Image 1 (cartoon, rainbow, N blue to C red):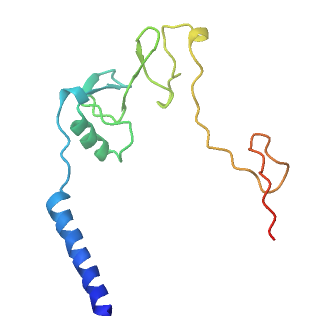
Image 2 (cartoon, rainbow, N blue to C red; image 1 turned 180 degrees about the vertical axis):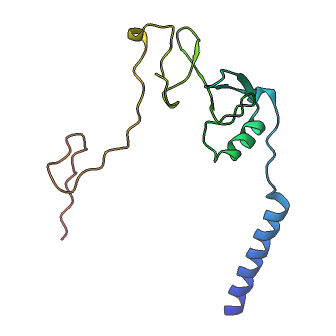
Image 3 (cartoon, rainbow, N blue to C red; image 1 turned 90 degrees about the vertical axis):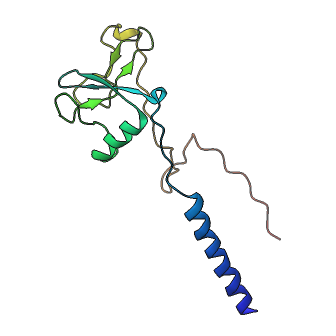
Length: 143
């Protein structure tokens, strides 16, 4: 009985290796113009487009996080600009250091407040109960 279990486990492992070898190759990202994104350098204001494979390559050079290197000035100051939802002006968002993160053309009063994602609240074990938390349901009595 033990030999049967070992045989089944061995056959399963061999099948997993074979499937991975034949079907688990790395997926090639197509170099398609529909995947282009616009990037702009904060320092020299040079604008350029990158397809998804080009962007993946550039991000791998910098640790998978923007900013990336500008092809014109070779400084790591290229960010993806945002477009104003009202006037379509391109500007840098609040993630770019040293910029206000708002549209330079639209009045400040007309612009929405930035969305700040907060971590979900966890009830504190000490202190008063959280008023936003759902009330605790009564538990059935154990007999």
